[in-house]
Amino acid sequence: MRLRHKPWAEEFIQAHPEVVIADPTSRKGKWHEEFSNNNSVHVEVGTGKGQFVIGMAQQNPHINYIGIELYDSVIVVALEKVLEQESLPNLRLLNVNGKDLTEYFAKGDISQVYLNFSDPWPKKRHAKRRLTHANFLTLYKELMPDGGEVHFKTDNRGLFEFSLVSMTDFGMQLVDLSLDLHVEEPETNVRTEYEEKFAAKGQPIYRVEAKFN
Image (tube, rainbow, N blue to C red; front, top):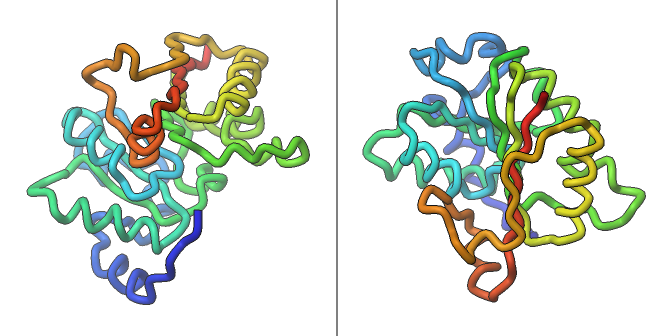
């Protein structure tokens, strides 16, 4: 994906600390204070332009959502969408790198992680960069209570097959699996921007829910 530089993005993000948390390290172990409730926290790693995490926050007001996106030129689009909503008190954004989750979250802070259309890193030598590699699964598990879940969607069959093997080898329980999500699409499914693009081309969408034992 080619990113278009937005020179105004950083200033705009800094002007809205109520949505994009300026110092997430200060919230580590205290996210219930940020949201002013004890509801569970779900995190999307690689939130992109925010369509999914915003839709989930709208659909589930009893759950707190955090969207993580590294690139300010992308997360600023998500921020604009959030600001267009009348109220989304259960949503925050972090302009940080998803590989550094332990800097921002403590054990038990997160109950669910979403990985949507992550970079497949198709070359074998780059396998450790895939967000479903055992190294990342270890990272997610460190931050979740027992029974925490990873929900994964992709259009890439190779990455999906790799992920199923990785999760199974890690000892995770595959709770729900679909090889073509849109054949009988659940009413609760919130589509991402990429998902709509691929679905329009008739490409199957692969999805799995996996639970840590």
